[in-house]
Length: 443
Image (cartoon, rainbow, N blue to C red; front, side, top):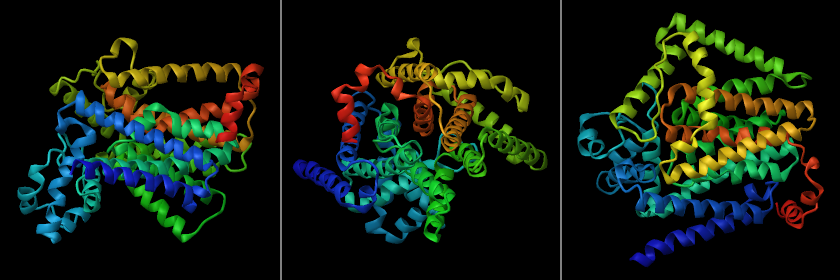
């Protein structure tokens, strides 16, 4: 039986590798088949590292993200054989918020109901439902689930990489931004929410970029609506940050100074947000941020989280948010600090931050002139990143959570900076290096 448990995921892995070389979606990609297969292989190595870490070092399964949604899905999936109608009602969320379903299924789950409720959509349930669906053909094999999650995240990365290349005409910069950032690969290679989020973000970006060039179709419209729905359910703050960035990018077409459009659009969104808060206080973004922060602080204190740090409570005023914004963004950019490394999981993001600061310095020393269209996209990437960082920096007093929550913005930040970097100013020895030249041809 143990052999079968490993044989199934191995066969599925090679099936996906073969699909990458045959399927039209990947064939139409601007990256070589070999480089895409390598990227997926790196993902699978990362997923094995996730499995090992959470099996050997973080052994409380109900608190381990890569296991808890998988384990909870068992209680939903078992209904497929005994009470199939119950299964499909829970899978699609049809009239299942009753005492019967809670007594027979949901009360056995650890994460169907969140430890705190801020009135926003419960993203835990989407991940549990997706795992329950996979169990129809996985037979409860954890590694099959990780392969499926990896594959859909990989589709998102490939879609994002195609857009990055279309803008930059650099395979190396695009590949580095979507396939090589350690934190992005790690936190989207297990059974994590980030896998679904990366899929939705990448696919939406690709079809939005095509639509912005005038390539519109009904199919593309349905894909945009579907992926937008996933973004809203999974991480509302990502949707909130992504929407004005997309509108600004679209509105700044053919503009020689696109930053003016970005300033106007973000100013309009701020005014709309303040007006909505005045008319309907229950939808005030200020109160949502303040409430989210209080929930997070209380949660970190209740569970005595090791990576929590001191954070002053926000006041429900715009001035309070503005006053706290510089520190909030600084925390997200720089944490974890060296003195905060009390876990194996903090070592990679520490070095990643050092690499990011090095890239910032190189961009200052070796920056290049970019086209107006490229400038539009750089503003798109950086404005999205800054707003994501601002939201999570204002609300999150836990270093471990900061590291994960900024994952959706990481490819955009790295790519935005790489766009500015002039690789022709690299030392001649590096530009003529055989490995450097081979890497360009390999991708």
